[in-house]
Length: 111
Length: 113
Image 1 (cartoon, each protein chain N blue to C red):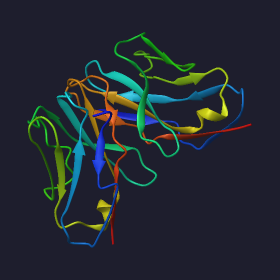
Image 2: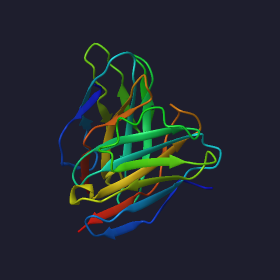
Image 3: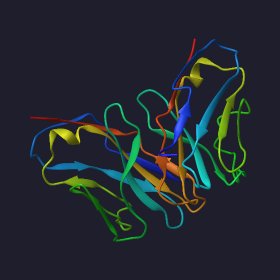
Image 4: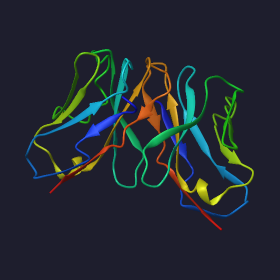
């Protein structure tokens, strides 16, 4: 079945550091890929998405490119801020509209 | 409504009791989803509704779990004869149509003693 594997956390970075959170997937057909973010004390919210191969999703300085050849959707940001501290979830929507989420990666950014 | 709401926000129950969790989706959203998040783990997809119908119930963990939706609005997730392993945060999300961007509620934290 479909599944998502993402980098285990926690990840601790200093402000302005470069961020990469790895995400790989296993799926049949042509899934859509997502990154969701959960800020402390808040609910999950969509950060960015990509619906087909080579698409790049971007939002709030974060980017992720749908790589079919490596079945990956790594999240990147060039310069993190303290306000980016949150839990990040990679997710996949399969052909049956079922969603699969990764385990989440907790990011802490220190000033 | 302004967003997805869920009730109760917290529920503590004794092993063997039944519980009902409620989700109010964003008005006009035809699709509704239920997930479970155990402590330290990712989200586990349980079921989704297209209108009032659930096309695939295979994600429900056991036959103690059931869900229904009425009026293309409110949904309830019922867990019968709760077990300690049912302790988790249960999240609901809705989207305008199936496959569209999902908006999540704050979740219900269920603790089974």
